[in-house]
Length: 529
Ligand code: GLC
Image (tube, rainbow, N blue to C red; front, top):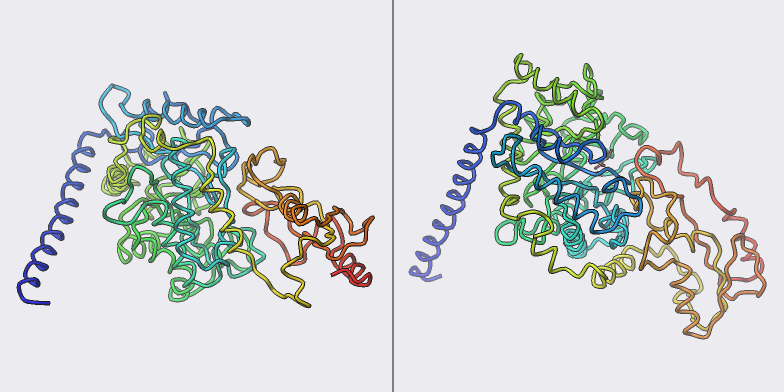
């Protein structure tokens, strides 16, 4: 590079760097300005994220609550048959109620968090994508980034702000009921896909970061959720600090580098110590060594599992470095007890201020005030909510790339569409068996195909191709057939589950509709491929 150009480059770099430093300074001054106008009561209200089934917009205003969430299977106005408009209407109600304090002063509104973990999966009609385990099999970071970006647009379209994703869990024992929420058992692959997922949700640092079609992301569950003894959910991860970081920490390093704004504390313990009360990991490691400057969020009443704590009282979690409780029914008691703990000095004013400053920092970065109430946001109104055709096409590509071919004996595949095909197993017709947990309901169960408008079952997808090719298709629940087929497709899978309800003693597939081995052997004896 010639000297003149080098000088220009260095000047521009210095200017850009100073601009960044100036922006940070402006942001911090704004945060301090808001903080200085907040009463103690308003600060304590700000560190609560309350589930929408337990609080009204009026109470959010009265207590200056910082955030709201809907848990898996929790819908606006408790309506099972909710519409997109219900989500937007309720988001408006909470936004407007929280935009001013109870005595009428301007306030920073709440944000609304949801588990959009494989699509905006609580919203009927949203596009669903493979769970992380399937995306891990794709090994395609660009695909993962596109999917998170598509999910962000559908979350924005519903009036919400934050997703509790990506999980950067590294499942090490497949008996863990949340194995499917992890991208892989490879720390490196988890770090790569987690980083691109955050970029998809939030946008790249710099220009598009937290722009109009982007949402806040959460890396979870910090730290070691996938490494518990025997795969017990919320169990004990027994590792040296070095191994804990080496195996379970890379996804946090990569997502912090990508600008993730939330990190959710985990239910598990590290060497017998519950993470929600683990000061060394939450503060010294995460905030000081890894320099995370966003919000450390509790998991679902997770603070209550810390020794000496209850669901409505846990100074220890805040002192350990939790910045925001995730709380359900007991939020009033938790508010009152936490306020008392600050007054009595069990929680220092500086720790409370640090937590509130982190929450304000994220709200200001996300430009929560400038965005205006959800229904007025441009991105929401620009989007065609009627048919997420592009997103569904992306989902199809994701399914293709998530498929793993173990063997292709006798070159059975690709199938000839003029063949006689037998499809065995009710899982071929029940869409919820393919979507799994976190699909409309928390467990993904008790939802029939009508909950997935626009989705195609495995049977229907194959039938469409075979009929186009003038082939024949027959469905069987147990492997018996009327017309001897050329090829049989056995659909085998677990019933949907989420979290601890999926943890198993061993990897034997139980609770199945037909005996896979018997049916496969019978068909093989009858020379069916
Ligand atoms: C759950 C899960 C967590 C989820 C949260 C909110 O218990 O552990 O992954 O984001 O609660 O639904």
